[in-house]
Length: 231
Image (cartoon, rainbow, N blue to C red):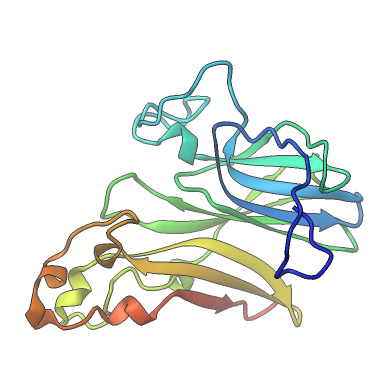
């Protein structure tokens, strides 16, 4: 939708169709002055002639094997000359379990830096990684540049104190947001405690059921912020 009074609205619905398919999550749009195009990155991919199973049958091309939900393992890119469209069909540019994407476009060169999260396996205990790809333009190719060090990730425990009963309760970080400020890279993370999120991927833990454990210390934590040392 569009608003003429600012981000608080009100908004007027704008007719448009984006062929994102049956599953699209974590959309992020950036504008490339070099290409004069809008770039929409989503977790998911374009529709198929028949519905895809919401299970662990593998990614669209089978490369990730059994155990990786096909609707949760791809990053797609849609391109348009204006926000109202028309938008191109999705082009799969990256793979990874729970690969929520966040892009950054260099205004001068048009180079795209794409960051996306991924897990190394479906079930816990698993490790969260953030992978980096770059491309000279939206036409690609997107080249893998490796993973960021895991030390920048927010804690995966509800308490950093190993002696606390909440230490054995999982916390999850996801949905990164990448940007550049003052010549340095910044990443914002979303974080929540799985044991205290009954409507969001809840995983029970003993401390959550024990009054003696006290309140969940991570309830006050909603995310994390990492800053690069150099540009």
